[in-house]
Length: 226
Image (cartoon, rainbow, N blue to C red; front, side, top):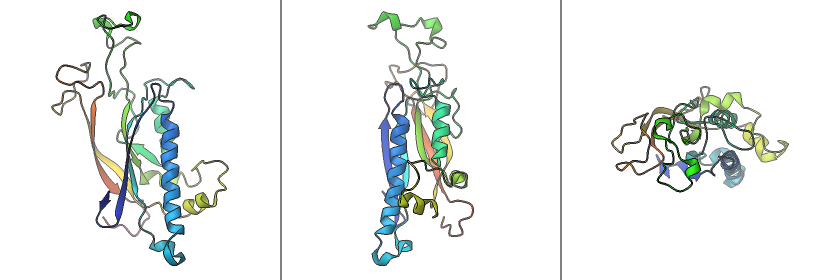
């Protein structure tokens, strides 16, 4: 996608595995792809003038990350651990510092479904360990506020890749901040926090996540063109 002539966007989506163990590897792969794409485009610029290369594309990712309230190393990805990891990649989600209590799923099996050993009593639906009430859904983007915190933590192998070294030394360009984020589990633009879903009127087991993103530049960039 493009905006204002040369500004480009890469919009991606990913549905994580049940326990979220593939979410971080996929996010890392996307991050590496964007870095190498930026550097390769600059290296291939006609006449050996990388400053004439087009601005790097901006990444936006919609994720059913399958992140959970609690982290179990090697078995289940916790939302705080996910948030900490992407911050080291100079990325953030629409939730900012992820709060495990901000759930986007809330469902449990009933006694009318197969596998009765997983069924949950109505009175225990909010507290049972068998209930899926977790902060699983995110909109991911690069956050310029994190650029100065991670100058040498791209973290791929030994760090000796010349393309990575070139990248670390140059300006990253703009990213985003999130101005507004909301959840909807009714289909009417509202979120009822104590209501399980899906329901007859909202047939999804994940809430709708809506965010308004604003393009941002790093603070010391004198070439802002908002």
